[in-house]
Length: 357
Image 1 (tube, rainbow, N blue to C red):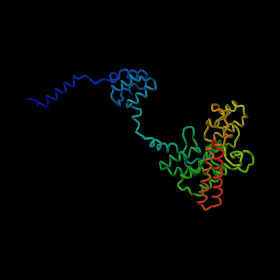
Image 2 (cartoon, helix red, strand yellow):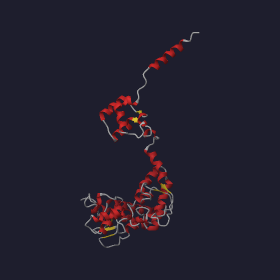
Image 3 (cartoon, rainbow, N blue to C red):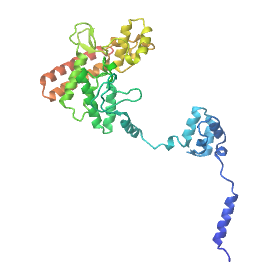
Image 4 (cartoon, rainbow, N blue to C red):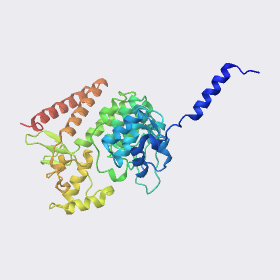
């Protein structure tokens, strides 16, 4: 019985395949690149590179390696750039930056807090977002930028709950501390509350206006002083009032005690003055920028309380305008008029004193 012709053709093809040379191994294909990757143990498991898939023509990859001759970390980056490596970037699910940020909110959100006795944490009535890492508590001015992200991601309830926390702090302490720890209760941070209120689901809620007015009182509480300066208020030579950063507590900061003591030892000024300026620098949020230093290379020359900062006074001008506008909306003409006057006076002082001639 004769077999069909098509069977004979197929059998001949199989015999040819059986006699063909086997495909080259990674060692054969990549030669010097292979040896470098494996000898330098770029990957802990020697199987990782040999299972990698090239993203381009292998010959071109080898030529690029010969040209660049990367070593160490550069060799690893070269491989990741030219190959899809098991267990590395190509096995992770594709994720945009925005998706990554969205995925962080649940990880950084904390529930309402009632700390145990002896803890340095301050209680908070509603959920909030922390920066993460060693920063395990809510911080004041950081939170405005967090709220912008929450707004973009439709997390309005969390914005409102963080505002409730800040207003709770104002009700208890008269201001929003640097962060929600007992050791931060001597200082605040740049006053962003008026911008936060703009992000609220109900910006005209009377509770927000009350909190804004309390914050203004905190920054201006010593405005009646006739001395050259008192705490956070600075009386300029023409009698105008502007503000500076401060901290109501003396001594080195609890959370940076050893560092502050060491800094004060390096200064020829009174230690108490150095500690005050370090604390004031922390209230600024710019802890620590060379803008506060007499010598930009030496922290011991810090002089924060000697400076009337344009950023702080611009934020307070914004706060005064926000209070005036909300008072007008609430029908409180006297309050609106008073805060419009405060804002106008501050603007004139900023224009006169905080611009270079």
